[in-house]
Length: 307
Ligand code: NAP
Image 1 (cartoon, rainbow, N blue to C red):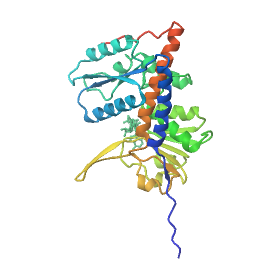
Image 2 (cartoon, rainbow, N blue to C red):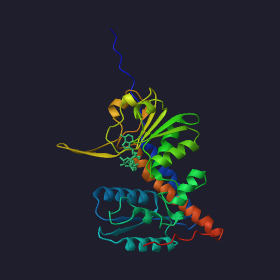
Image 3 (cartoon, rainbow, N blue to C red):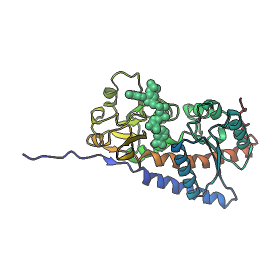
Image 4 (cartoon, protein in one colour):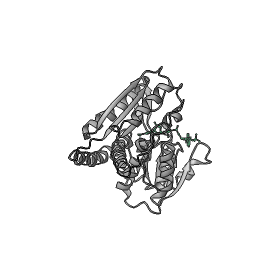
């Protein structure tokens, strides 16, 4: 009897594709420098969350790599909401700052929504402000959340035209699931969104040509959730601690899923690097939007400071 080994999915190499995005950003930064324009990103970290420190360090390093000026602000865990809002008001008013990123999560004593909505939408490089969210839904050019933008680039590299494909997004958070579903819809996919109240999530997923998992549950999705030949984007980053040390795993059981899928993002090395690349791309877009607004004499008025 001849035994056959099933073909395994190809890896979607987020490191390589993010390097292309970073090269595009670097080229644009150089072109702007020739016009004496130097885009700058302000990054605000409040408190001592160790993972947030790592994320901020990586963002600052990549910004430096592509020639974007970065300004780092740190406030202690005990900082008050008023202090955070005061700093954001200063950054909103500073014409030398093009992008403002507040690393989430914030300490529990600070109202995250109030902080997000205090950022001037034209400097909101995370794309979380309600003005940018509304623009995204209406298909207006805006600052779009970085992780879904990065996932779209991966999908376009793998699938080309997405028109008519059925995409299932697992997760409906404001920062990943909802904007992801919106972008897929704009790319002419038929989109289903699965969440914790969905009935028989695996059966819904098995209908999908594209699965985007943004759940935060280690290895929840295995081969039994997938249609043969599906393209799988694993956004999840889950830290598993064992006697052998810490390791990161996605929301997808990679070893199982790759026996059925056509292509899959590994964790780490899939979506993560794309998020940072699109943060820097957004900083360029923000700087362009601000120049256009200045030329039009209509630079957006900074959002009112609350609290
Ligand atoms: P979140 O805000 O906690 O949202 C999780 C979503 O998953 C919710 O909509 C929830 O449904 C849904 N869900 C939970 N359990 C489920 C289940 N058993 N079946 C179906 N749906 C379920 O998380 P998030 O901020 O979107 O992040 C998701 C993951 O992506 C996390 O691991 C996070 O670390 C990672 N992440 C990675 C990047 C990156 O750059 N790679 C960026 C952002 C986030 P309900 O709405 O019904 O509760």
